[in-house]
Image 1 (cartoon, rainbow, N blue to C red):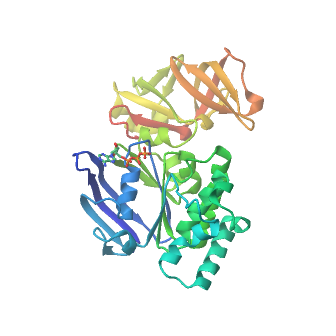
Image 2 (cartoon, rainbow, N blue to C red):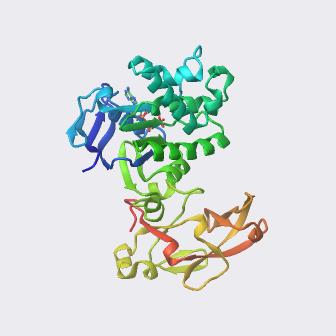
Image 3 (tube, rainbow, N blue to C red):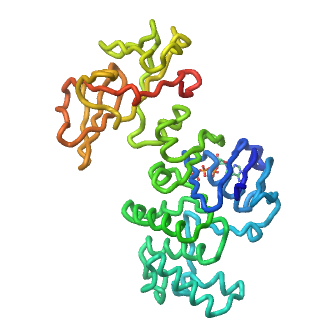
Length: 358
Ligand code: ATP
């Protein structure tokens, strides 16, 4: 049985705003789930309903098979880390970590043991005597995480815990949080708008938009089998390229190239005759030049960005902008005309009207 079950969960705020629509999810014990989506899509609202900090307007929330809609945060055995973490400024790192356990009246020697263990997991052992003001932002955030994991909880909730850190600290903390999760085994729900965090940390990703779940899947599933243009465009960096064209005799025309879409869709392409279709491909799915068993397209190079191990090439493809990922040795000249190929399996076709994958 799933540890956490969200069945048709809805949130309608007192002002009438419907922030979350029929959210469904089953999380296994120990799973690391990431809610990802643009600002305002309802990630935090859903997390706060799971935490017991926000009423559930409609739907059932179950913990280990028991209806928990009306349980308080403590009964749910949740710990939560927020974006803006507040440490007690006049207490040492040790006392900040021990605070919650002290309140619960846990024995001194048990507290000592747990503080030492938590500090070790988080690399804070040598800072236990320091005051928060004498720590870097990343170290303070680790203390905040430590304060939550020091209590033994079943559910660990994190709302954009890395957003106040610089890019380098974020990368370090990302792997630390994954490691802590492995060691504590708590079912974790992590909210972010950053698709890289979602892809690198999650067992499963929940992609949200405007209060609706778009797709639930492993990082590989949402990357390789996006259900619609939103997921395809949100997951992956740089995003998937989209070119919309009308289907005529089973083909679309991009510049001087006629692409036979039956090679991708078989007979189903006839359903789209005379209709617009969206031709999608990821920047990294292309090969420069004209290859066999692939769709060949051409365009004019407008900008190149050298990134080190690879480079982005911005191309005008018959009036549409596309980004191609190439190796540093392949970077074409500015303003040059280039051809590139996309293998059939690297192409995604979307219904231009519904935006769903075909
Ligand atoms: P962000 O990444 O910006 O935090 P989010 O995806 O977490 O965004 P939520 O904070 O869950 O989004 O908000 C979802 C929607 O609900 C937003 O449109 C927000 O304005 C609205 N909302 C949040 N709290 C309230 C409230 N108390 N009353 C009315 N509407 C609210």
